[in-house]
Length: 414
Image 1 (cartoon, rainbow, N blue to C red):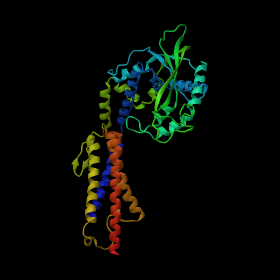
Image 2 (image 1 turned 135 degrees about the vertical axis):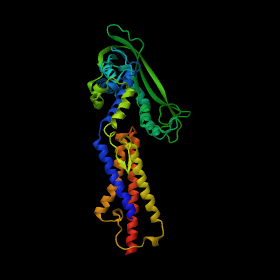
Image 3 (image 1 turned 45 degrees about the vertical axis):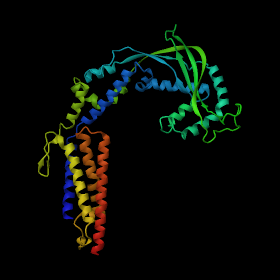
Image 4 (image 1 turned 90 degrees about the vertical axis):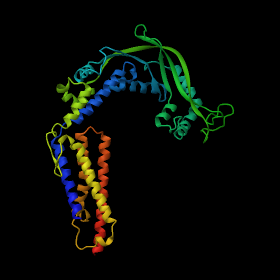
């Protein structure tokens, strides 16, 4: 017990030393690395916009909000929720992005990105033919819609997994599509073909939710186990003339506000390439601890190695305590006979010793190892969380075994 007390106290002192070294050497290197990764994702998304204009809404909130409002207005006009597939045309009015530029130049290029966006003004169109057809379609297939949804939720898709909520919504929500063949319209107008895309059941036998068809059962629900598949049905309504709205769009300032740590050091690292910025962030993370040489059991440790050495050492000490305690607990009971109180606080059941044991065995190692990995290495957050959680569970296991040992010792001593 005295030996385990010594190892436990050594682990506690080591935890406190690691926490102090990490906190006193705090830099924003990891945050710069995270900002850089997120910023480069935005750069790659911006590069895709010219080929995929529909993703512009992910970059510019006002465009996304305007499209959502348009979809709501069309849904009110149709009378039901619909998904809208409306084409747009996007032309860049600035130089193309090159992610091989230094990070400062890339940042400035992103700030200067401008596009000319052309979209159809479809909210003011009557769409009477669409509404009339869809009303007839609802009369015919309306009883099946709720049955479709219930049945799809219990089905498996062709890829082998269950249908997701998005799959169910896609099958049960009609799509109002606008197809433009030629954008070179006169006086700001273009001709577009309007289509309604819906899903209907295809079955070898009769579908019971269709009582109006010959041979169908007079039922309003899909029978359990009925074999059917949702297939696409398209209805075209000819060509209509739509006005074209043209606007200039640029990345909002809020885009760059999401990377405050990268922007803060941009003046110092603006000449570096993105890959060099990643290495700079790693080096900066250990810059303040690099000159320190803490001692571990008499051995000098380079400060930059603390992020690896500390978690491994704390894990080894925890496993040593657990294995030693387990081997004693499983030994001959006569070796555990004694008198008085055990000298290790972790074996005692009073409030203060239990609080001390819980903090120093379960919390301190998890926090110290997590901080060292998070701040002094390039380890992913997933590894940090898993390692810290494992150390916490290990400490709880040691604590529970020590309390059981103290109980048994007290019973035998009594």
